[in-house]
Image 1 (cartoon, rainbow, N blue to C red):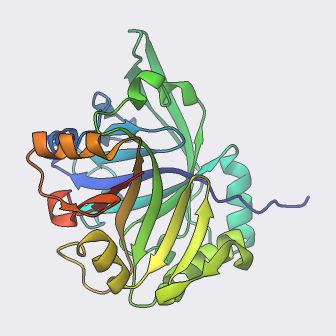
Image 2 (spheres, rainbow, N blue to C red; image 1 turned 60 degrees about the horizontal axis):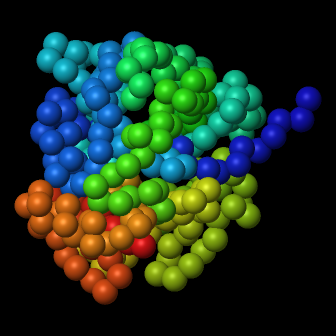
Length: 282
């Protein structure tokens, strides 16, 4: 039986906040995001989501007494630590990863209870399959099959004071961008990645672009690097599309968030956004 090559499409991004869920959720609300109520996974972690049109942002951490659960997740640096792809069949992806010798652990199923905007109780159920951890320094990359997509993508949760509608760029910073991009060339095929200026490599992933770039690109475009960046490949920054930068500016001012203003973008550096630099644009 032929094994299909997965199509790259960003599902969501994970920001590791460890034991600082309260602080992180308060900060991201000040950044102008509407967050879902705190969810609790059957695996032991907890989260808040900022849900957009085609993808979403997840603040992932743990509550007191649960640090021993999912320890592999908390080993990543605080900040952007998860690059997650869409799939409708996690088991088929597993067979493909195995065929390419880039498989990690077997597919896993888990859930979290959720209260929908209409007041009804439901479960958000997922099935995930991860690339081999050794291929992804300082984080994880995995595929997520949503068995109950309605328990995530609710229109009422897509309305944000800052007007953000989607994540449009995910940036991995590395001293050697080609080496950082190489696992994704094996995953999606060499033709999926394009070389561009400044030694960067880009991968189209639905409405988003995943970019592997040197430190100079991140410093210029995102007003700096994560404070603890040590030169190894690291998920570092996001660009987000907003319907109106005036909404972004109003949210940042109201939230007392320092930012850098350009002609067509507002930038919040990593030190002011829990280790992940944010670029708001139209």
